[in-house]
Length: 257
Image 1 (cartoon, rainbow, N blue to C red):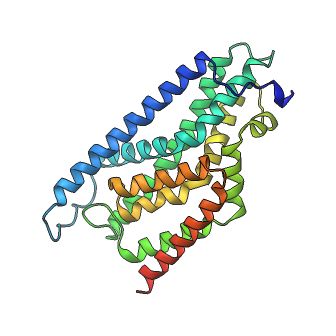
Image 2 (image 1 turned 60 degrees about the vertical axis):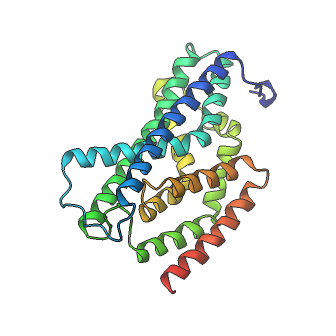
């Protein structure tokens, strides 16, 4: 299939799909902001807070999982949306695909499954840190853990794997064509692979929220802004490297003040 056959201008159905994606992202961000505001109100004017009760109850674990799922979906949508729309355009031009919109929906479901699986793993890690006494009452990690996380995330910003994932998300067309899989199962698998690649861009950035507290709106906004700059700036790779150097320096300072 010729690459020139893919129209880069969104058609009316694509514009409608984009609107739904924006609404979903706004809903996630509204939920996150509400949780962050509640946490700030709870901690305002108090020098120290008592530790959270242990162990966590089932309802609290479900809320924690819902929070991480919302964070992952909101942070990953900008990176994955381009791949979803490209997949729809390619599916429309393949005679073997009878229902391109349905196939695209299955592809998007695969992305969501990948992010939900990652959110489940982060929830388990958060739970383990809580039970080990490494979290404060705001569910943020102690300084040594935060410093190690910053150094690890900063180092990842310089790796070839990070930049390969970033390039895939910035220009997903070639990846969609090369990795094309027929049928609904193939679309689901390909969507999961696309979602996993999007996670590769910033999975350690998401884990940094364990250190600062996942309900902290300032840190969440900073991570989201960095992810958008990496995707949208012409020199996004340079921005990723500069941010990585800053995180390594900051993390080293926290470890060795």
